[in-house]
Each structure stands twice: as C-alpha cells, then as structure tokens.
Length: 410
Image (cartoon, rainbow, N blue to C red):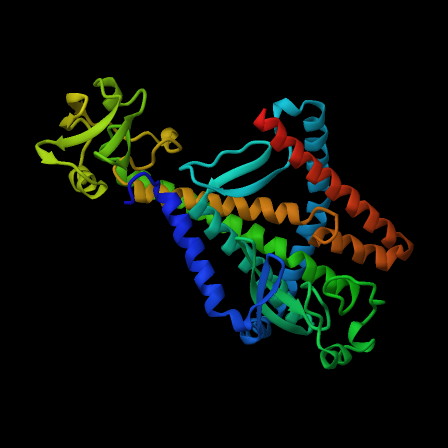
C-alpha cells in the first residue's frame, strides 16, 4: 500500500489512469463532444438481433409487462418526487430532497440531501450493470418489434461510464449527425403512425414504441430483484457459515497490522475488547485477514479463544451467530465476503432507484418519451406543453439538488 493513501483512493487513481489510457489507445474510433466521449459499433447489433429472434412470444410478453410496470411507475415516481421536493423546500435543514449518486472514498454509503456517496468500486460496477441491462433491453425489444438499430456502443461523460443502443435514422448523440445516406433510408412508411416530431425510438406504432421505451426500466427492476435475491441468499448462506462461532469484531487492514473494533453486546466487547490491533489468537500470530480466516474456521459455540491485542490479553467465548446483526458484520473474520454482500445490495438498490427515476414523466427520460407517445396518439396538441413541463421539472430538480448541497455544507 502507498503510505498515506487509502485503498479506494488508489483504486480511483488506477481506474482513471486506465480509462484515460484506453481512450487514448482507441482515440481514432472515439468521437468527442466537450467532456462526452463515445464509440459506436455494429458488433453488438448482431447479438441483440439473435437474442430478439429467439422466443418471440416471450419478448412480446416481456414488452407488455414492461409497459404495465412503466404505466404504474409514472404516477408513483411523480407523486414520490413531488412530495419529497415539497417537504424538502418546506424544511431544507431536515434533508431528504433529491440527490445525485456519486462515487465516494468511504467504506460505507452516505445518503444526504444534494449528493449521496457510494463506495467507488460499488458505484462503478453498479452503473455498468444497470446501463448495460437497460440499453440491451431497449435494443432487444426494439428488434423484436422490427425496429431498425443503427449501432450500439459505450460512452463516458467526464468520468461517468454508460452504454447506448442507437435507433436507425435518429441523432441521439450530440455533435455527430447521421450520414445522409442513412437518413434517406428512413422513409415515412418506415415510421409507421409517427409524424416524426422528434421522439426517441421514432418508429413503429404507438403501442410498439411503448414496449420499447418501457423495456429499459423494466430490465432494471428485474435486475434489482435478481440481485436482491442473491443478496438474501448469500446472507442466509453466510449466516450458516458463521453459525458455528462468532465473537463480534469488525476488522480491516491497518499500518500496524489487522485492526479491529468490538461490537457491543457480543463476546469480544463483553470481554473488554474495544479498538486495537490483533496480535495472536490461541498462540497463532495474526497479521492479515487470511490469518484470521484460517484461525476462525471451525469455531464452535462456547469455544474459548485466547486473544492477544494491543489492548492486552482477553479470553473470549464464541457465541452463536445472530441474524439480526448482519448489517453490522456478516463475517467478522472475512471482510471479502462482507464486501461482496454489500456489492449485491448496492447493485440491487441502484438498479431500482435509477430505473424508477427514469420513468419520471419529463423529457428526455423514458417516462417523458412515454408521455409524449400517449399525447401523440390521444392529444397531439399537448406535446408542446410537455416540453415546457419537462423544463420546469428539471429546473425544480436541479434547484433542489443545489439547495441540498448548499444546506449540507452549512
């Protein structure tokens, strides 16, 4: 470890250096607009097409299920966002308003008004997962509905990674207009019922567009459910693993060895341990998590341990693991498993939150495009009002975030 630098800071530096090197290496194929870098490719289109051609009835059911979830989400997210913002503006000091979700260098997530921080490695992995499943879901349902796809690709805005699936004949990315021969290929007949007034996925009938637009957030909901189940399953399995013996300490590597913090109401704390550095357990030197894991394997309830620390020597009797304490320490002897469990929880959480927010009825979010599709079909004169409404929503959201950051700094 580099002296004076935390592991997550080192990881962030390495990640940014690797990202910069990759952008430089692939620079001839990358397009840039200000701080937005993106690269198109047609390789993923074949994969999307092959998936969409399999089980067409399933993808039709999947698309309609996405529409059902999307239609239910739009009023829910509008009500939740509205009440949250109103409550925040009434009492800004209480917090609870909209917040950006940003990468942080702490070991735990911190949620507050204006900006919330997720441990950087959790953030990167979660964003990658949610963007890939979101965009591929759009693309698969689009191909299942016979929409044309121009390209797929990745993008980086500043240091924020992302992915996209680009419909043919639409300029969804700034600064790089479609070539004229591509644009000419999209005729009025190709656009079905649409009048071409600038909607995303501007092809097919209005019901087909609804399925494509709602597919992204529905994929995030499904991914959130999958990772939540993995989280619960891992917690259960981990509980069984540590059921044999538990002394109640949280550990992390430090400059002088393996540092610990005793958890209240558990054997280590009751024996007098508080905070310090482990030296040995039952005569075995402890200098790393691996050493601690090796010693802790096979512990049984009521087994006595002689623990030497910088605080002194303690006799600790292992107790049976208690499920209710899993949030504090799933595996006190295996921080790697704790990290993995936290990752599963974070991926599930961010997929649900981002998918839910994406259905807010304001352009250019998918929820705004869904509303535009409904208006085009049933009340075309109202489409212009949706643009003004979207500007209002974004102004309120950004204003709430700025006020939240300002309030948290006071």
